[in-house]
Length: 463
Image (cartoon, rainbow, N blue to C red; front, side, top):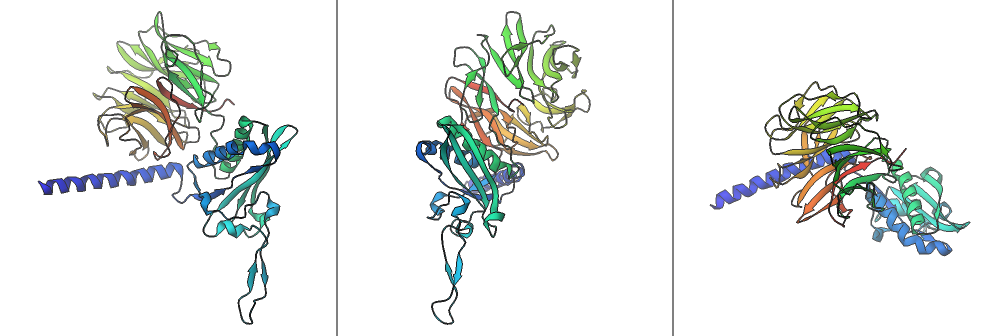
């Protein structure tokens, strides 16, 4: 009996090791090298009335950079005592004669210097610093980013810029996010500032489509049909959103302007069910699942619902078409043609159909990474079998990585425009809320708290 238990434990440990290795391989590929650049970010100080906004500014700047997943934030307890606020504060050390004949030359410091930050105990590669003030009734930020591994101030200077915002907490957040976006751009990362998350919420008593900023702020309703509206989709340019809603005649797809909220024309062909809308990347067509010959089948129309084309022709339900945003040609979808719901792939004309997952468990909610190489989806296999959890897959190799486990029921993943973050829904007990995380499963953050919130879609800001 003891031998059996030991062997079982060893098997579990081996499985865990394989799981962690796969997580590092795929997560590292998406997020970047394991050796992240180390950045020190000082606590900025403000002149006059700007100082009262510094708590908001410093928290926002740190969170934006820390949440990016591409930087290693150096803890502030390791920072030197002398902290610069502007490039002129840096004073190179000089060499003085030794105190004793034959001794080593002495290094005399005259103020902060680059090696204070690049050397121990800080060991940073980069330093973000600056200060704020009030100018013409506005908040002014002077932001600097230095590569502290360089030999002098001129070669270290990467960002040297002014930022302006209102003299309030929103203004402090604005300039902090703009500065963070410029810093992240140095590392080839797209800032999430300006992006939106659309989702379904029942907090008003009916299921409506809502939107919020990428960090969970500014939550507001986008529809008011006072019925059941769900399954939001957003065009690649962020200008339109579509969803399924229940009207007197049955289920229909609605299309709205994201800017004005105005309903746009879309013709729903006569069918008992129509669901899971999806815009093509060029914004010219709509894919969805509609009942044809008694089965939900993948169909495509023009953006206004005209020129209906049937893409699947099987006696099985097929739903959730998702078009590769990189190619515009490849379509993922969920099909029951193999007996239980699995993820399948086809070209946008319905040809070259193949099963992507291996037939184990139930699969739902496919979503493309913006690079067109990775897929996120919900699956009932893996660790904690029987409950849906979030997985990602590298399409070329079919390698998978489980991101969630032992944390309720996790579904409806969607990639952020930066290709590094994911948004998803998680059910704990009777409550379902929306969370974000990095593509390695780390840095999970809850965005919603009121009512039940489901089916998030991360959208680009309106161009």
